[in-house]
Length: 191
Image 1 (tube, rainbow, N blue to C red):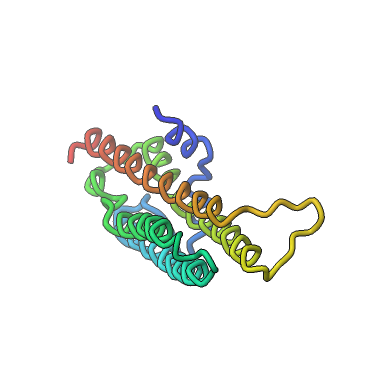
Image 2: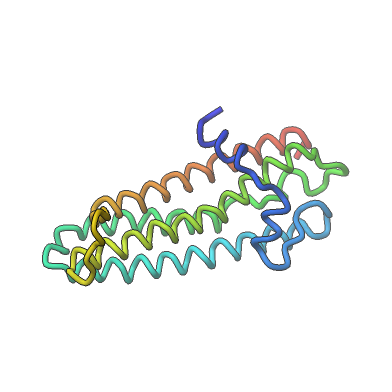
């Protein structure tokens, strides 16, 4: 298995953490609520990612306003496309109930893996907040709006853009792994 797969599965908070993060979420355990739970997860992550894409667009405008900002235009566009791609791909991923919606008994271990990947998507939204905060601080420092405290290192705008991109790439990779988990569920439950 890949390092990312192992990371997601080992960091899983599972069903309880997923329920705590999404108001009203009851999960996939009951056949009747699987579609609703999947739609709630999708709406939650896509809605939050839409906010992050908008925030990045605002930060991108501030980058372009810097004295050397136009030199970073293609780089910011590339990073924004990856953020948008993650949001759009998550919106279009195979629903979590697919492959076992008609199964009488759902394999608990397989369901736990699916919850781990779904909960990871919520964590990626939070990771985007952190790297976007770092990018915001880097822009402020480059524009001379803030001065670092003694001994404090300030991340460059370029490095902060790379960090945003790295989270987007990892999040996209996790979606591919999630689809593999769903494919395995489909094989086991004969869909």
